[in-house]
Length: 539
Image (tube, rainbow, N blue to C red; front, side):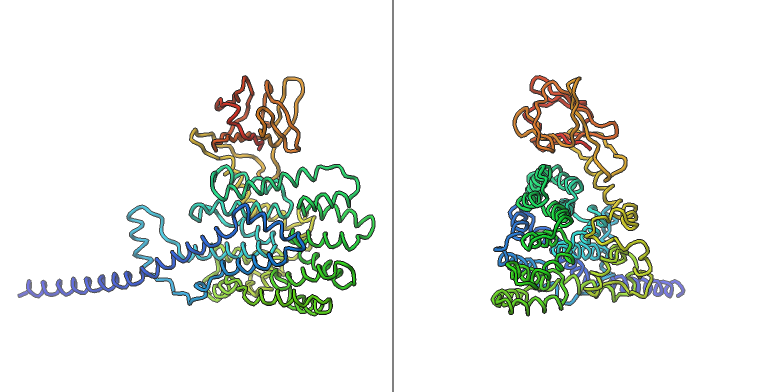
């Protein structure tokens, strides 16, 4: 009898355990579809951003239409189309809660199969940060976009996200006139993602960068003549520099003031650009209408205040530009608002979100960054520990559009903080390029400060260079446009640097020394036909 009771007791316990396990698994299975749906949604959002405007043609149009007075309609259409691609109606649907049971079971299975566990919530925050950075980039607030791009780790996203990140980081640096930072990122895309639309876009931007740098080397003494040449080349940072020098000598005419404001807008200095546009629009001069149209665009699409938008619309009516006001209003009505703003507001309402990438992003102490967050009402609680007002000492010159920001306290902190870490990673990644014939890793000292120039010599004369490109056989062009025949000459890296050899078959090698002999390039790593050599870059 005792054994029978024991058997019944054990059977009851087993039945209870079996029932609990069955209920647990049933509950988990019901949430797996939600889990897969969330994964798929995140993947689709990433792809939508990454494939939006990465072709060379799109980037070329994006740069050209901003400086053309006839490009207003195309700019309106592009803004509308981008908003509809980036902010689909599907994103406005009610968010489902994270199925914790399904996530627990899924991660358990993934651990048994030696796979990385899913990090749905962390991935959601990273994607949110990416969308916020891209929103800032499209709003021409490049410094704010870079603050976020430099916090994102490419390893946290699947391929080809690193190419997207480097391409858009390079684009932001290029727009701000930070040539060497832009070149580092764009060359990395060319090396690591050959035969892709990322590489084609990067090559276009590198060609644009080369044209800018060649134009900057012109010896025009008159700053206005130099400004004309820079503007014609599309080099807005150099145009701003030349016109600011001209302003110190004498007041600028409305013609040059308008060009200065256009370039300030293009480089992300929207506040000063707005001031000049207002100055021009308030006069009866020939550029009043064009300047006011830019104010309409800034007010409706690029983060301008409601007062700016209303004043520009009233002024447009007074100037007889009512058709443009109607067109801008109609486009703005069908342009979808950035969903990421509402997404961040909902994220802030969750009390447990006190760490992670989004908390780091929103805690950035830069006053200009906090002003932009406040304008969108997505700043962290101003009464909490993230109050940027308590950290204002020595940061007044941190404005991202200021030309002396590198001398401020915050820029020093930036170099010691996220941006410095990001530059360390990107330069180490560039110098750690692998090919079918493996190369030695090399970690450069003082990353992101400068590139060490290499030199080539025939034993008597020596010439320094940063970049050698073979466009015509045996003729290597330096970064300043000079061409040299290197037959019989020895190319040597700086004592603290290294050379990155790029071949036309998309292979890359790290070398320290090379010599051209009898139609071959003989290096300390390999010997290849000179016809295969595309570029030698000094780092």
